[in-house]
Image (cartoon, rainbow, N blue to C red):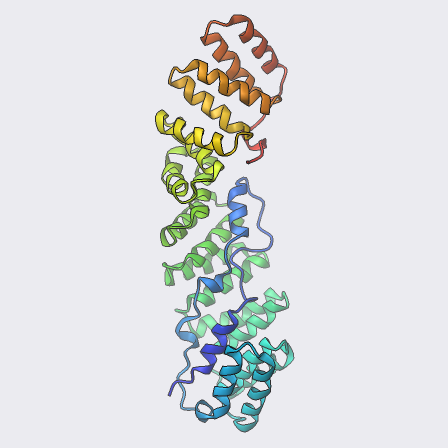
Length: 376
């Protein structure tokens, strides 16, 4: 008969401290959008389920003990104090039950009794050395105390016993990354994605690991896979697009940003960056449409006026381009490119004096990268 108490207690706690989808200290990156996304990912326990490793089959008498039902009811009712009292009675009654001791470890952890939790899981392994979940539980205790290096040996034993458990490899990758073992983190994350290709959290973890090693294409590939399995997440799609822009690959950014714009129709930055990419590849009509939308949503965001002016000029709409560049120079008076574009547009309209003044102003300013301009 299946002893369901371990699985229910485990999933009820949601393993809140075991692994986070993004490491606390990512390596510095040129792409702030990727950094922001990796730091704001949802907790993996909402995305990765423990799976079959927690479904322990047992004919243990503890499975039929009324105390078991009482423990489960207390856990499901959020009464960890009562659950802890009952589970101690359960182990007193069944001192040789590995399942009962494992449950006691989980409940002790819930009740903030780490010492008892540790000794309970160790008791499990003494009674049943092949009880793999106990190794995972011991790793959880180490992580709860920010002892990531100490968690790794327990997780290694867990994946040795359960090589097809994606969560184990996922947790190993996270812990390895937290202690600076970046190459190992990538390796473990790849195992997790191979075992659970439909789990977004596994791809997020691989993206974090690749990002830490400086592998920008690998980071974007992992994020793209995450987007495939969570196609309604506009933030992921937008970040993929921004990453391709930073790699100077605007054509590849367009599909992700187009989907992001549909999911986040009021996000000015998404429309602005999509318009920039469309303008860069010569798709001027949709570029103008998205840039105008961005300008409407964030009228004080300087780059959108710069790119809108460029798109208008490419269409031969010089007077509208002039208005856009004038707006850009008012918002970014120290941005050289805006003044140079303004000068070129005055010149195209035959306004030599205005063109000369704008060009002179441009020459007096240092070159400023677009990345130095704040987002809306």
